[in-house]
Image 1 (cartoon, one colour):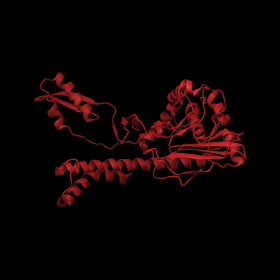
Image 2: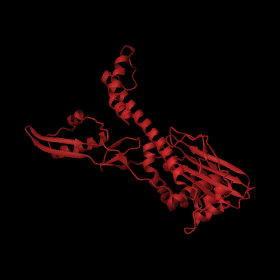
Image 3: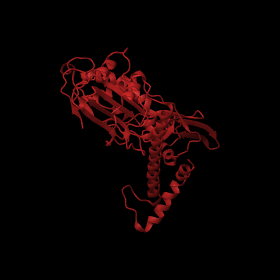
Image 4: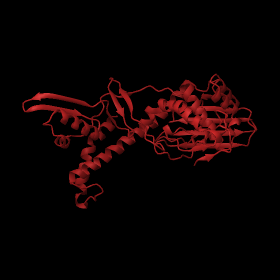
Length: 377
């Protein structure tokens, strides 16, 4: 559910929002699945500027894990990204989690009965385009016969995919701090009450107002079958503390010091969701940090190596399980289509009860290689 602030001044440029135009700022960037917005927070210009720099860096850093896990945006589809295997081969990782070759291939070799033409395309549309181009060069080439003889193949990778991941730094750090401020504003806190965070967002030379936090798990009952994105804020006027917490894909965890002079009303708000479908999650975040923990955040020393490594292992484990689930969904869907085609059942048709056993046999036949690969893994 979107929120609207009563602020009239843009939190970032200090210009009247009415003059520069209001904008719905995604609390968590749309690129990684965020849907909830806050209005009356920043103007259109600042929304565009930070989206093209700060938020774009969030996608760059998390694109690999996002595409493995699956991310559903409230508008637009994630772009395909290039990946590389350990043996140096390159592929495109598609939004549905499948992969395809980096470039189409074409070869024409002399044969006994003319020219032997071979094409490898990434999809049917590309194959049709290539067939038309070949027909322009080879008059005897028949595009429709070529397409009728085309075969869709799936070849398992012989080498694992490799990529490096690093989270944070200046641009992504500012995006995550902005996320915490945005939720605070959506919860009724004036952006200027987040004085420590706003100083960091406005001044390029300011000390970061956040630290990676792996001293302990702050999220109760965290999901294990999929990753999640989360932002939480807690305002405690009795301690004069306003804190934020941001977690991306169950991997990157930061605590944000929004203010150490907070005098507003008590605040406690959380927005969490499964990036694969955008569905919100009811997660409890414990931001009641001890004085010792707060001091470690201030000194950026809240990420012990051992607990950091354990958290990353757990996060990547959730992403891998979700990736395997997506692979199984695709495989079963393809097996269903294969069985329907084998029995001549049209799309949306009904499987005759007397052919149910035969239908199941065709599905098992098609799923066999997938099951064998998954068991080996």
